[in-house]
Image 1 (cartoon, helix red, strand yellow):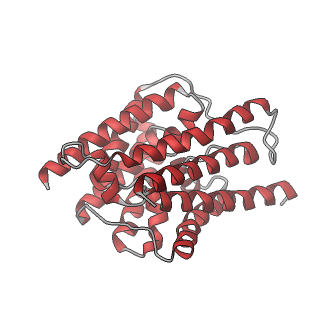
Image 2: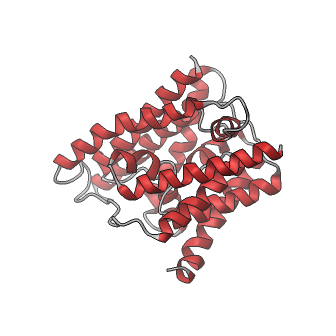
Amino acid sequence: MSRHALLRLLVALLVGTIFGFGLALSGMMNPARIAGFLDVASGRWDPSLMFVLGGAVIVAVPGVLLQRKMAKPVLDARFHLPEKTGIDARLVIGSAIFGIGWGLAGFCPGPALSALTTGLATVALFVCAMAAGMILQDRALQKVLP
Amino acid sequence: MTPYLASLAGGMILGLSAALLLVVNGRIAGISGIVGRLLGGQQIAPNIAFVVGLLAGPMLYTTAFGRPPVVTIVASTPLILVSGLLVGVGARMGSGCTSGHGILGIARFSKRSLAATATFLTSGIVAATIMGLLR
């Protein structure tokens, strides 16, 4: 493994750790908070999670502006960014399905993985079902719905 | 710390980590992308390292604050299974979730991510509101 590849590994571990800490602090790991945010008819709507998205975007934008001035990332030969630009049916249908799943139980992928640290069997069950869904999509549905 | 301040600070930390991964490793901090590639056997080492970090983060939080982050389950077991499947299928089909589209996509002014975020927020509100009415 080259020196850069090893450093990228360490950065991935470090960034994952900071990300997991941020999730824990933000409240995104708590399905009850997600339900309180997404359920707008409960009479006690909790808008605080809007601040997670707002805070994240405010800090990420300068990073994106810096990235656009760079020819390549610090530890790699090129940037690995999404290439698609158009809005297609897969994007909209997939996002709609994802949102329904998120609204039903209050877990999205990152927080669910971080919540494994609680040792709750329910969280492990969610993560297994999510992994099965990802495999189902990538190995089967992808070919049926091009 | 009030929930608003904690959410804002937590969000800013999420934004910082997304910016770091972009500038240093040249990659999008999108969790469904990272897990999907891991399950597909691509770039195994860095993706495992990131997932290990996702587990280490809350432990660090527990050490720092002297209590673990609150995780209150709201759905029954059958619903958890259905929800997990939908999240997995949908996030991969839509090329991202709350992190890749919601944070970095919007920060990159991506039209696709803006459309995706508006869509999953809307369907999430519909699903959670119906669940709330049934509860």
